[in-house]
Structures are given as C-alpha cells and as structure tokens.
Image (cartoon, rainbow, N blue to C red; front, side, top):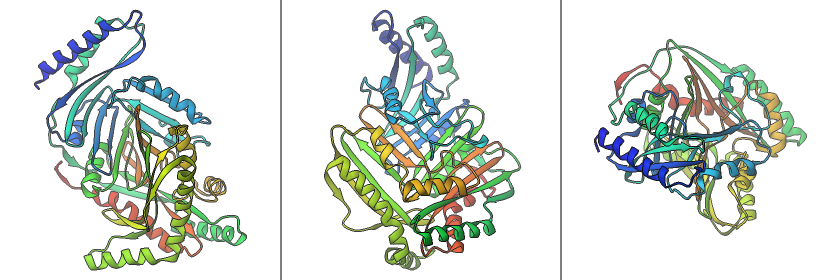
Length: 459
C-alpha cells in the first residue's frame, strides 16, 4: 500500500470510529491495523526519525514488533501491589483487541530506589506505541494506536494524526552499521574484588545462612562516539538468533537492550509455560568439543545442584497455581551462540483465580537471578554489589487482554551516549571457584564484545 493511500485509509477509519463513539467520548485507544508486506522490522525501526522506540522479538520466532512514539504509558515507582499495576494495564486492553499490547518491564529489585544511571527507567514502565510494524508468525501488519480522551476534538486529532503519519517512514532501507571504537573498559568489581566477594560468600555457606547467591558484574565500555541501540540489537540478533531480543529507547538517548535466553513465563489464556535455566558452559568450537561440554554440564554435581534450586522454586509455584501439569522428564540443554545452559520446562493450566499479578509476584526473582533462600540472597546482593542492577535480571516483555510473555532481562546493557554498561552474573554455590565464575561472565558478555568490534557494512 502506497503512503498516501495508507494515510487516507487511516484517517477515514479513525473518523468513522470516532464519530460512532458515544458523546461524551469515553477515553480509549483506537487501533487501526492493516496487513503489510514482508519487511525487515529492525531496518524499518532504524530509519524512523523518532527518539522513543521499542523492539521485541521472542525466542520462538513467532512474534516481532518495532514501535515508535507513545500512545499510552503506565509507569510508577511503587509496586507493593502488582494487582494495581495490572488493573491499570487492563483499562485499555479489556476491549479484546488481539494485537494491542503494552510493552515494558520491571526493576530487578523493585523494593529499592534506582541510582542515577537508571533514573530514566521507572520501577515499572509499560507503553503502547503510537505506531507499530509487527510480525505475527508469517503475517505482517502496520498499526496505528490513537489515544482518544473525552476532551479531544476529532478534527484536531485528525490534523495531528495526518502530520505524524506524513513524518513516518513507511519502508525499510538497509542500515549502514558502523560501531565507534572502544576506548576504555571498567569492570565493577574488578577481578581482585570479585575474588574477595566469593570468599565472603563462602563464609555465608559455612554458617548455613545461604545455599546459593547470584552475583553480577557491571562492565562499562566507553566509546569514542555515541552508540546506536538499533544497530546493536540488529547485530545481537544476527549473532545469537535463539534468544529474546529487546530494546527500550527513551526519548533522551538512553536505551536498554538485550538478548536473553530465559523465559520467565508465557501465558496464553489459562495456559502457562515456564522454565528453569541455570548452569553454564561455553559452546565448543567443534561439534565434538561442544558435545563434550554438554555432557560435562549434564553430569556436573555443582551445576545440577545450582539448577535444582531454580527447578524447585518454579515447581512449587506451578503446583500452587495450576492443574493439568506437564514437565520435562529430565533436565535438558538450551543452546545459545556462545554458551549453553541446563534447562527444565514446565506447563500447566492456571486455576481461575490466578492472575499475572500473582504470577510475577511469586515467580520473580527465581534463584537463577537471586539465590536461595531468596530473601536472604536479595539482601546480600543489595549490600555486596556496588551498583544498581536496575532492570537487569528483571521481567521484560508484554501484556494484552488474554496473554502475556515475560523474559528475564539477562545479557543486557544500558546505552547512554557514548557509554554501554553491560550486566551479567553467575550463580555461586558451594564448589564454585572465583576464576571459573569470572570466566563464565566473560562468556556471557562475549556476544556483545564480538559485535562491537569496529566494522562497517549494511544491515
């Protein structure tokens, strides 16, 4: 569909819907969606002259969306009651529109305040974009979401809509990706301090107060010029396609990006799918070496014990919330481009009274990102880590009227100007060695480090 014809179609549809509404107009989101030709969504998103962008693609390659602007936002700092958050989200979702979704996420530890680095990201933040190019399986759509309030005049709204549509780029052009040069890297903690923290943890194991803790590292990369977050996500997706990919770009150049292997949960009507992931080995450079590392991981007592804490936590939640429960018969392996993990999948039919608010409150944080016992581990993390995790390791994803999907924001980074703060962690249990856990984190950020080598070519 050519641009002029599409704009005319959108305006006619909006006028028709707006005039059919009751007077006074009830506040609502009007969504107008048109089937579209197959398009590279990241290339389309990268060509938009808009400072606020979102991107999401799932690990199963069923759903991908690029969004710009903001039709509606639900955000805040206090999240003592998840039910209040989801009641607010449901306000515009209750009309049942299949593809209308809020995209966003929640801080890892929503009970502590953000530091200056994360000041643009609220404790929780969910957005309906103004414009979306989306793929649902093999079908593509271009959609416009219009927030209509009771004080709006239809003709004024149409004039603004036409102006914005004319500024929209309708086609995807290959991006020339040229990353700036890396000037400096700072690890927090450094290797010496990391070893000291592992020693501290061992004293906690010895006293019996802790069985597992996940300690993270922040690596700050300084470049000689600003990074383009869409370029980074494009390369992350190409180099590691078997992951959830996301980008939340704020309007002042601050962006959260990531390529995470881990699903927190997916809900489709009353059916829920979740998984326990922990334990890590690098991928082998040959098929033989890869198979050897896989067998080593599947037979390692330490890694299986670390993984068991996660399995037990999620099993208990599923047992409390579901009927018709199905689970893997044995622990398996999930493979990414540069690392592989132990994985155990579960699913069930949710009981009638179980909501997304209940699920998030009870599943997150799992021992895969916090530790065990959970409350003690979170308290130790807050005291031991000399930085704010922000949204790293928190839930990120989407919600609509009948479904939701949240990944765990691992292998993620925060871009701010010419800096990229990378976050990754390692599960520490009795038997963990400081040098090996340091190297595990290096393997987890390897994907970022490789793609950020200065090179120039079309995307």
